[in-house]
Length: 255
Image (tube, rainbow, N blue to C red):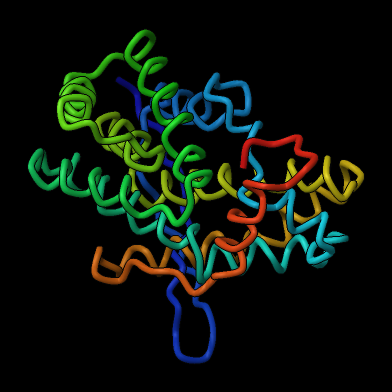
């Protein structure tokens, strides 16, 4: 199979700033196409129906324009659940690449437990379940099938980061490419929710995504050096927003 060389940017978080270094990785064109499909808004997992507590944050006035939206999402990426998703994705990718099935199950269990509210748990498990179903029908993989069976037997909900990281590793997609792409998709979904809720114009939405690019890369770099012992969140306002959203009177989103 022919390979293309894809350049990724490795972000090194130094004491006085961020150092960016280009690395070229061999990647089969088919694997790149599949990664784009799995992270596309057209992939049928229902992510568009969740707002990650953003709906309440808009109603309560915490998020009201592009600047406040970017600040809210930057905090999530650097200090909240976005950071945790990056660490879980990284750990899962290494387990799948090294064929460490026991550790993979441990990470999956941890990912399922690491949800602050019922809505954030649903936001993780429902798209992950749909993702497993679609991948099994269109791009089947024995490791992912085994993971799904084990989680079902143990009554553990799947997490999207774990599912996609496993499939990316099994497809030979390098982590320095897969992780930033996953986080970009993660953050773009919340920006899309913000565009609908605040509301913002489509151009403002794209500007918000562009302004968060460095945060995506920095979160990816930090996750590369982190372990599961580093999991945790200091973005408590997002958790509180999710809790408040559960009893919000008028809602468009499921979280």
